[in-house]
Each structure stands twice: as C-alpha cells, then as structure tokens.
Image (tube, rainbow, N blue to C red; front, side):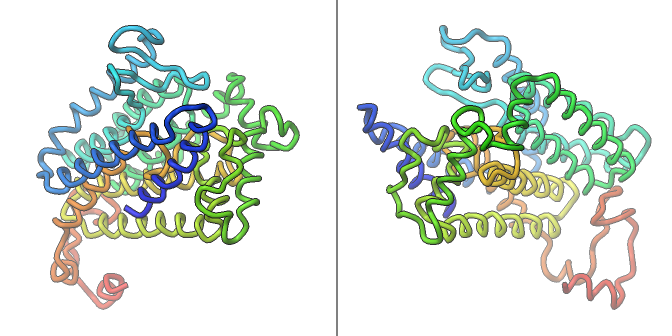
Length: 391
C-alpha cells in the first residue's frame, strides 16, 4: 500500500506537469491509475479468500489466454477495429480491447507461475527425473520467444529467471539448470548481436555519456535527476527532469523522479519496502502447507524482487534500459492489477501456512524432491534441526 501510494503521488507529479504544458487535463492519467489501483485492491481481496484448488484450475486457462493474447498482439494490425495492437516507442506490446489497453506479457508472467506450481504439484518427483524439466523449459521458451519478438528482452529475462527460481526450489538437478542457464545466456548474446535495437541499448549502457543527446539521453537524464535530488530531494512536485527532459518518467524511469523529488531518503525507503516484501514473501514460502503453495509464493516473490531490482539497476545505470516498470509504483494498469493480485495470493498462502507448533515439530516432509523437503523422507528432529528451525 505504501508503494502504491508513492506511485500515485509521483505519477500525478509527472503527468500533471506534462498535461498542463500540453494543454490537457492534469488529472487524466492519475484518474486511470486510481481506477486500476481500486481494481487491483479489489482483486487482492478476492484472491486472498479464494480456495487454492481454484488457482490450480485457473492455471491452464491463464496460460492458454496468455498465449492467445501474445499471438494477437503480434498478428493484429495497428489501430482500427474494436481489438487491435498498439505500437509505443517501436514496440508492439499492448492489446487494445475497446477503450481498455492491456499488456499480455504482464499476464503471462503470473500465468507461468501458476502453471509451473500446478504442474510440479501434480507429480512432484518427475522434475528430478531425466527429461522432467523439459516441459517447463519448453513452455517458458515459447512464451519468451513471443515476448522477444515484440521486442521486450527485459520481460523475457524476468520470465526466465522466475521460472528458474521455481524449478530450483522444486528440486530440479543443479547441473541441468546450469546447462540451461548457459544456453539461455548464449541465446541472449546472439539476440543482442543480431538485433540493432538491442545492440544499441547495450552499447548505450556501456557508455551513455558518449552520446548524451542521442542514444544515451534517457540514461543520462535519469542520472541527472537522481543527482539533483541529493539527500533530501527538491520536494514533491518540484522535479525539473519530468518536464520533457526525462523520457518515460512516469513508467520505466519513475525511480529517477523519486530520487529527484524525495532524494536519497525516498529512494532508500522504496528499496527497503521491496526488501520487506522479499523477506515476507520467502517466509511465507518456507511456511507454506504444500509444494503447490510453496512454489507459487516463491515465484511471486522472486518476480516482484527481480523486477524491482532490474528497474532500479537500469535507472542507476547498472543495467541497460529495458523498459521494465517498477512494481506497484510505475504507471500502467495491467502491471499494477497483476502484482496486487499476486500479493493477494501471498496473503492467501500466509493465512493457510503451517502453525508454529507444526513448524516446531519439524514437519518438513514436502512431497517430491523440492529443496525445502529434500528427498521427501520423514526425518528425526534433533538438536541441529531445532537450531535451524529456530533461526
């Protein structure tokens, strides 16, 4: 809630200033963001009380719908008709259905989490067997391929890393995961080399100041915004960079405006909030009742933390600018609703988690080969186990 509130303040600060300069209504964008926040919190409350069996049933439907929407984005023409794709900054990432625009890749990330958890829970030991990881790699690869074509290499990377974290926790052999990671890294290098769009982003990242008014403009202006804020910032609403100096200030680069208006203290508070979400999310995963809930909690928490880390790193100039929004904060209805729905799932799993008495008893016999339960055999609880549980 704190991150959403910070996002609403900063989105209004950026959008209202630009709207006034352009002669539009200063509240046009913030009204949409408030509407999506309301929908998101409503979905959060609904999902927090939903039976976990329903999430199992939703998973296949969600993954099928994600494929359909990603294909529609690539196949449908730009503009015209009740349903069409939308081109922004040279990328076809949005699907317009009447007055509503949504980003299918955001839905695909959550759908993949639900599907992996469902598939592993159905036959937990399979993932440790020869070829057991193949279905997960293939499905993730197909989704990633559709998203790369948009092009959106940043979201593809997040999709792959989230799936990697989930199958690791599920007990997939480390050697196979290492082989897949190497293959993915090689594929990313090839994509960067053959794609002028991606190659330009990497070249700009290495030295944005070599072309501060061209390809390096966004990165340079983001660093100027953060540097201008100092420790305490220039104050809410007083940013200079938001006035057409910093591109995408309300979405991908909103952390730079936070740094300018709220200073180092504001940025540190935002980072601390994501750290708190990470700690809470992984504690929920550790205390989950079964492998299905454990993997969902792991996937959602990993996605939130990874995406926040990638966004902040690109704003600070530590990674190439990839167009990844800051969860809960950046403007964007699909992202906000999907992440708030994910928090609702975490709340749901936390309410169903093991009781303290069960945890003290050392009931860690998770089904299959997941790494929290190791081989799934019943173990004697000794002094060492009690010490580890207490810690």
